[in-house]
Image (cartoon, rainbow, N blue to C red; front, side, top):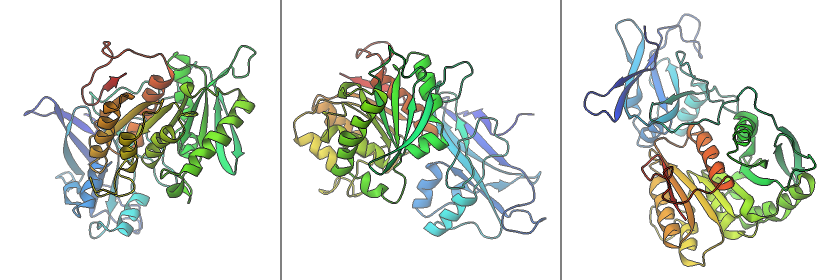
Length: 399
């Protein structure tokens, strides 16, 4: 018998799949006494469910009880979709869409009990997520730890009052090593402590996809995050004038901006692009994933919105390269990322741009981070070469 989630062809369109999630008929072990069974199950398909929550209607994501007592729901998804997901069994009425209700759902939602793929870890005490990767989703060959790959090491420091975890490549410090290329990863506590990006970096290095690289995982997920990651010149100058010189002295990191990448997601993606705008003398490469380019005004095309994109359009071109990606499910970000793409292309920037079929989701970002680092730190690939496609979900390059 096939194990859920069940993936079947869509009889009406070969580009789509019918994906059925199943929750077993079992005693609910949440806040109710032993022996009670759940009265319903809510499916949380990352960003897809969240979009309907924003519109005030979670009904499309409530599972239905089947004749055998199990609960199930079927989604029609394009065959290149990737998403993390969880299931939330509840007792009594279905959860509402208010922020307190939603936070409670997120705190108690669980991974799929039937999943077979490695789960996506979470932070802040929440449960991990299952990961759904349909057959045409972009490959993620660097994400999982591999046996036999030389391991680097990670050390923790405080620089200018900021926690920074530094991942050093295997063999770091040998006489013939350095200067090393540099990758500054914002939200470093997520990438390091939760997602084990060291495995990705070691795999990339072992395959020759990137040269030996010193990765600076800057912790930015505390109370100061909204201020730090909002086109803040003081924060970017701290990275440029305190963090990078320190890494050069302590670890032999390069001072060449052409071999230095700053990477971030969401507000971090905005900040990565802003770092290349403000300090191209130190950050010659920006890797932006699902960047919040609406900042500071979420009203689409209002004269106060998309401040950074307007600056790129109006001012002289910086000596910087960009890797920008955004999910097709990110209804609040897709238009603004496309606008940034168009502006950068019009101004003649070296840009690699990709739209993946997914959401605001580390399940997607962890593969995109590896691809972006390989593009910006690895060997250059001329535009128009066979591995330079431009279809959605693949890479669109301009040089």
